[in-house]
Length: 476
Image 1: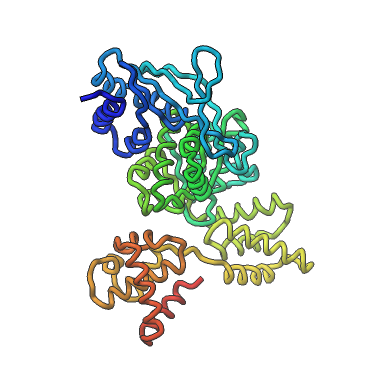
Image 2: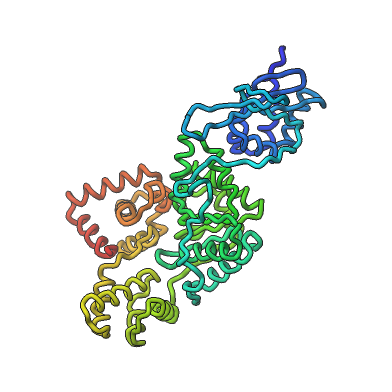
């Protein structure tokens, strides 16, 4: 049988496949193309210089064993790197760099005697929207700092951990630091405060704040442009990476996979990762287990609703910063009336100041009552899938476990369908996520449930009453 580049590489791949994870094999070895075999020298083509460096850094030993097994002790490996044109031309260009100084457009070959000896500095061609001239701007809001993030019982752990991370990013056991809690409790504020503090202490550090949604959009764009490796490489040069609302990765397997590789690289190299989420890792749905396990490596710190004393302190701090003087009676009234979150609390006091200023009225307890009554009435309350299941279960006098069970009893099925219907109506969760949380159903079951509820609302008077009653209980 004739020995070819394809046959030798095929045997090498069999060995590699048996010794690494399937996902790693798919990502780092399937794209490789065997090009030529010259005696003991095998040439393979890889998509980019970053791809080559990754292989040299992580898989050089296994490649050496595999190739030596096939070609003997004198085996050598040459990489042919497809150089990507980053100036708008979609067709790739390649350049050969031989020992003599002549210009020949072909490919860049890197002779790798199966040891990691390549150390030239790379320029990353991946440009994130909003970041100019390849200079990585932090995207931080300087007004979100520790000075105006007041400490209380509800946030003491998270704030203390944030300060520790800001003083020594990547050097504490809080890596990653996952800050979780409901809407308006200060997750984004605290994440920014950490980044702002780091930049003040160490301007040379590369800090980047980005929402999980924007990260996902950039990844999709990178895949479309065949720049996935450059996307990974860009994020691997960040010193402190802050990703807001990481629950947005739910159900997005491609984004989760690429973030898994980025996270591993940053963590292994002592870089700091900060994440925010509306729920704890244990409650996240449709996130791969390997990623969830990494979220749990560091510290998960919860931000809870502020207690009365903390709410009063927040209001007084807000008034002090705005140069407004309001009596303690009014401040305490607002603090007692609005308990949900910091955002609504500050919004109420801003509305009160605006009413007084625009209408030229003195800030009295009567004006405060008017503003708070309107504000509370018009403020939307956060409704979760868990809360919906609880309300529906109580309405039908059953346990949540019964609602989620596999039973096909009519009244239980209808209760479950109503829970799915209201989850779709009141939350931003995907159909798959709703089904997963309500009894491990699939998205098709949720879709069917929503259609059934719509139909029965028109044809069944009693069922229509169920919908109306539950709508009132869940209405905001």
